Image (tube, rainbow, N blue to C red; front, side, top):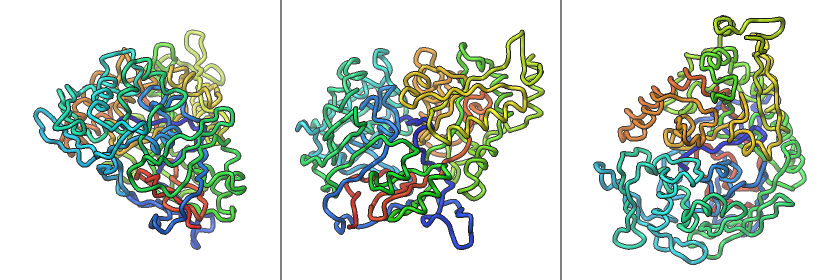
Length: 559
């Protein structure tokens, strides 16, 4: 997708260059720690699908069901929803094991950059690809999606306009299954567009786009289709779609059920679910090693935990200098080692907002806010926030910062308390507000109802286009910049990076943007979460995928 998906820390997170061994430890490491896994690896019990049992049910735990089945609508950009939607909607491009972008032959015969000036991309659709109402995928679906997401109609409540706003026109080629997309501005990461692709009917009107798919999808085109949606039991069941033209799925169905994080280990042990994400939970890691018939699988992932600051006028952190001072009082190493220390070897903080540790383009750009409590104290003094007893005050007002986080997760609690303890050392009072995960996004994160918020980002294979809406400041449309922080210089460099075809030049521009983001006190990445899952040992072609996209049709059981 051409924007990031987010998850509250009430959700199980999976992301990291730091990961654990498949057996949960090694003979030379009695504490059960493991060295980092290599980027470009996965641990999915890879088996030829032809040898797998035909049928079976994959029981998949989630933290919440989709608020909207349209992932481009602002409320729809959640990771749990993406896991479900990826099984039923067209993904034109997918990432392989090495993180390289590949054309998905189930939907496309080809996607070609046929001209650079002006930029023209020609898509040739698989003639067998069709929506489950029998309508073939066509250029009209591309045209409607581009118009809905190009930002010209504010009534469409979109999570992103990145790339789509650069499109001049979408036209039919030699047939309805040939699509020519002409750009008015160059867009280097064009393979991020139209993934997922939605039917033209969804994008026909703002009302249909915003609310038409809130309760259920109205058309799908994947190896599975929706069988049942039970909001009372909090589950969604996907079943094989007999209209699917690709390889027949090995599973009969996939059941996504909301499971409380505290119940995950017991649910796996009892057979109620077939895997769970360990993330940075020491308890879930230790429990996984004791569950009969389960295997701990590990690979680098793509999510990281972080603190987002609110720069809106309604927040005490609207002052950039105050945000920077507060950031300097927080040491990401304390978070990384305090939370990951028992389960990962030498965990380190993340020093880049775009590139993850272990990738070829990673470099640490966090120098503008390097942890330094003495500097933080001095800067707070200079800003007029003087220590009065335990906490600082200015003009009779105490320096209170409201930290919002999703309730019900020990990791959230750890991050919140570590933040509170570190800031107390410099005289800043952190008021922890743990809110229900069911309302976290709609009532707190999206409207900017916080000073600090604990959240996690999932990075996809397109580092610029997936991140632009997070750091681009548009006073007329906040999109995914929930803290409303940015600058004209950041905007300009993001646009320049988006328009650059040369990989090296594009990366150099991103690094410049990243340094500016750090200096703004926008958000503080804490650490990469181990990309580790506890998985039923008989489950094949599933586990820790690293940077790859799962192939839902290949998932099955060995016996």
